Length: 230
Image (cartoon, rainbow, N blue to C red; front, side, top):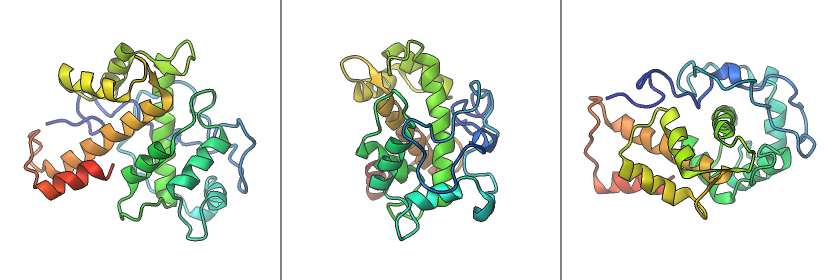
């Protein structure tokens, strides 16, 4: 069984750039950027390769990392970022541009996607990993939102999901699209929420599919934890 982003279906998931896609310049070391400035402009052109699963890169020492000062300006006294702080960060940095700002619920599931220690908050390495994913998803969305309306149509959403390597039945795809569409269209915030869910649920399934056969046995409590935590 091959999973999207893990070398299956023709290679790494196109929506997930490598660490080389992370912004390395133009990030202020202290304070928030002016309103409207994208937090790390996406690299020019849509990436053709991911270079590996996000999180496998060796992080730079924090003191020399371009994003460290930015992270410390956002994080609370505990040195981590919660959902409210993440929402404020994404809004003030103008990451969404002309697209709908991220809701608090989307910020919660973004953190849950990477919250491996189950604290409900995000550390520095998780913060960097999130923006690697967000930059990739934003580029993917922009590929299909050619009129820059801030939305994509259901058939474009189907193409986007397929381009990221996911292979699900038409019935499942239809259910996913209905879940994340409003008035027949999918907004950027809901698009990212869908991508987070797809990645998180695939990760949870893959960890349990030790034989890579595409099927697993779930205990009830384990199933509830996997589905309700995201």
